[in-house]
Length: 356
Image (cartoon, rainbow, N blue to C red; front, side):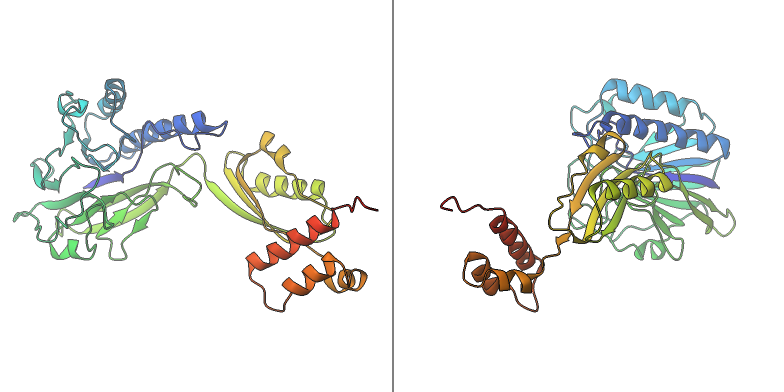
């Protein structure tokens, strides 16, 4: 039995909502999900498992129609899915009355239920969220059905507020594979008994690294996973980079180096830069011009001006600058203490005594 396992698509979300590329990222989420459906067809999969949070919020009727159309393009593939904490089923949810195409199975109950696919000899157990949080460990006593079928667990959670569980218990409970959702970073169990595919597209600057889906295959004889593979699919990544400077580094040079590093990795990605090292005290880096050339979500300047405090103290032994250096400078300084010293000296050096 061959399957694709995905989760946390968050259809309808606008990542980086205050950035000019936000609408493009929202479309990328939809385009990548359409790509997942095409992959299921191209790879001749038996099942497509979606482990919650297909939608970012309560879906509108037009969203359901769009998704249903995509599912209708793979009529020979069984699509099995649950609702997660973001798209949990409310009393007035459009999910309750929507008519899905015949190859789609929603496990919409509040308690674990099992659907049997007799032709494929596969049982799928799972349930949907009806509230935003589930703190009870509902799977602690769960056991796979007593049959010679392949047993799949479809579940969304894994933290204290969202269905806490012990991932190692799924094998002991008799499941061939646990298709999990909620954690946006991919994780494949070392014994191949479970996986989090992560979100197919990264959704904010903390979700670095590759994003995609999980491909799997289970032997109908042993009912064990024989292949489990992560397949990168995302159109963009959030890439954090550290750029080191010296007192000789100018603003233009720093901008050029950042452009070079981004060009090596791809201009389609979204960047978060940290600037570190010692800089000329007369230079204040202004990299705002890069926002017209790159998708830059954040630039954090952690560089420090390279002051010669011994020379400054010798030049100002009896005024405020000398007093300030003597009061704050010491051998071991925290980053906060360094900032106070640097910013204070910078302000004092830029202050003109109007009495002169």
